[in-house]
Image (tube, rainbow, N blue to C red; front, side, top):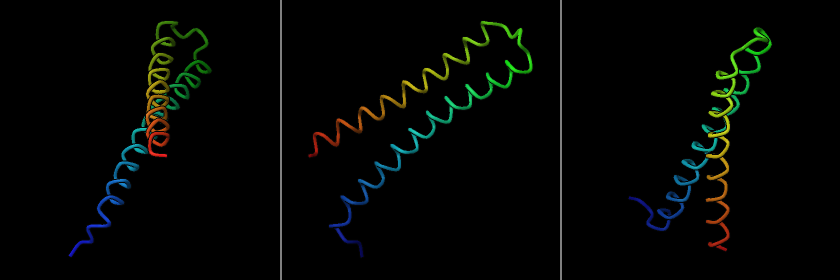
Length: 81
């Protein structure tokens, strides 16, 4: 037997888990690309500028996604208050 009063709480927890998963993925992608770029640039100072730009673009795109997720959450919380 399930408690119907618990359903909204479970939905909120599920939503929060999804939010945190998406946020963590975006940050991990950004960090990974910047870290990889740093290591490669240290080992190969003459690294191709196009490859550098590609890694930076991937990191920036992921940071943009993280910012978007945080803005959505902030707006949701403000609307719920």
